[in-house]
Amino acid sequence: MLLALLAAACGPRTVPPSDWEIANESNLRREQAAAEVVTQFPAYPRNSNLLEFSVGASGEFRFFVDKSSLSVGGDGIVRYVLVARSSSGVDNVSYEGLRCESAEVRRYAAGEKDATWRASTGTWQPIALRWNRVLHREYFCPQNIAIRRADEGVRALEAGGHPFSRGFAAEPNRPR
Image (cartoon, rainbow, N blue to C red):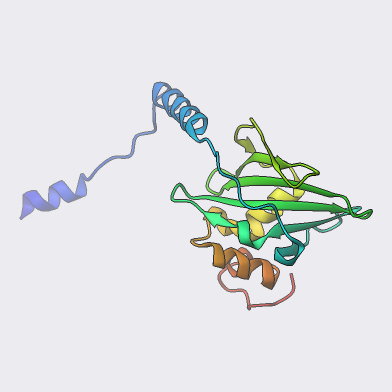
């Protein structure tokens, strides 16, 4: 029994990763990102499927997610079609993905005027644009954790934010 207690007290130690481990993990992530090829794009968005979300002072644009395109992959990536509509009615359409844990975004395709997709060769990038930050933080990745299913994201868009983005003690539907 004394031996068991001693073994438990000496349990596994956490050792920071070496420079070699860090470099190889980074290479592995790059290889995985390169291996991720999206060849099938969702249907082009229809106005009846668009859910608007607020990004604060957005100037001349309104932002929407096509609820029928929203998906959460087994890889934990939240994918969606984003529509940025100018005040003159011109739509900028893109098919994107969010990696919640690392707060990265990737554009898979851009929408064309003839309602088709043009594949993008972009890679994963840190989130820099306000609308991507809002989608990440307030709708699809509350507390850097991916939503579990598409309907959870749709409910968050319809409610004006995911309840966990407000913290665990927040009252539901309370204005932010």
